Length: 600
Image 1 (cartoon, helix red, strand yellow):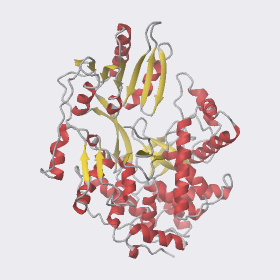
Image 2 (cartoon, helix red, strand yellow; image 1 turned 135 degrees about the vertical axis):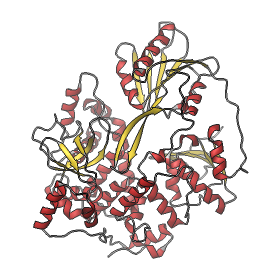
Image 3 (cartoon, one colour; image 1 turned 120 degrees about the vertical axis):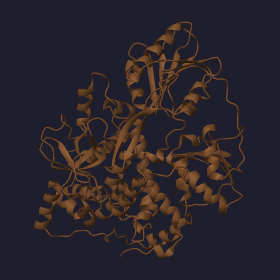
């Protein structure tokens, strides 16, 4: 197409937009289209929508497919095209009606397929040996290797003598050195969701497929994530076999008789549904009352998400979005982090909490230590550690990064010297700017920074507790074995934390707030900061505290409460916003003025 990007054809991706008033064709992610629907619920700006890769079954795609059914009733002029694999056709026809036209394309002739009886335990080393064998045969062509996500990083450890590794997002490129007369061979290392990236790579002649993927699964009952190793779906296997064309080879490191699931498991069954519920509640305000999911979410996950939103004061007594809930839905953060950011407006520490929000929303800023250099990397990271905990350490890192931008000409080298991820810090900086712009747009107060003072430290903890009071733990024996009050599980602090076993020599704090709990490895809690139980009692809603399961830790809190009967927050208490502009804003974005009165 003889057009200029950003004019007739544009794109919108997270933190970047390249469009103009002349744009007639726009590419964007499914998540960003959903966010756009908050202000344009009927998608009036579009005459046609093409949903690509619907078979990947992301949460955002499933929500889009559900809402479009209702939108098409109100907008019969809208044209919707769904691109997917043939195995999903019957499911979509049952969802949208059998009179929907279907266009099928013939698949390309697959490559020669070689199966293996490799066991799932040693597939990683089998893939490594196979890559080296292909390279030694001197046959032309690059290699695509599909691994479980965690193994992409492990593969790059083997680059000392054989070549150079370039890593970007979930795709790594391993460059095997060639002879004097041949070019180097590229070995692309990819994860389970990377198949479509290689259709345009004409040089690929070999595909190695381990047939496994690692997925994060959320457990609503205990509010924890775990990493699960499972087989890929049949359609993923078929796509990988076609990447090389008829002249290539596909090595499947699993037996031919293995029965693969027909479709990929929908992410809506494996993820925290709080954002989904929050978004659908927002769509109810806009007039879209029904979302007919292709695969219905888990009822237990739905109930847990509704309970969490209720605890966060995001719902009113009728189950609709409250004023707080409407603001939370405006912020591109998870609900707990958004509530903490709103609370920071009340506690006069917005500058610091917005930094924490951005750093936790971006990829981890810590680079994986190279083999044999773990102690050196930990020593570098220790320079940023804050005695109050990991949330404050993230502020130190971000402030040091911004200082290096002002004072140093080579910021990338500074990041390399301290073993920090330059791209992740750039992303955090962009997210922070976006959050600040949103707060200014809805005219919420942004305080001047006072990081380091005692009152500021206390206020940051209060703001964090306003959102994360459900994620509190107590050290029961003084050795770092933490009892989580909400689910009564035991966990240990992640080794990379400021309170990790080898990083903190002064002992463990008794009470902590944590950002994430994962069942993988040693059942660890990540991003941990010390809190006061008295401040927790003052901050947590009374009805949440009363619903905590019985435990020794709850008895200790009750003892503190009995000694000090001071200000408890009840269910009716919400953040107070005293700007008339805020009321006008709610009237515009709700389309329902009777919901837009604010608590004075």
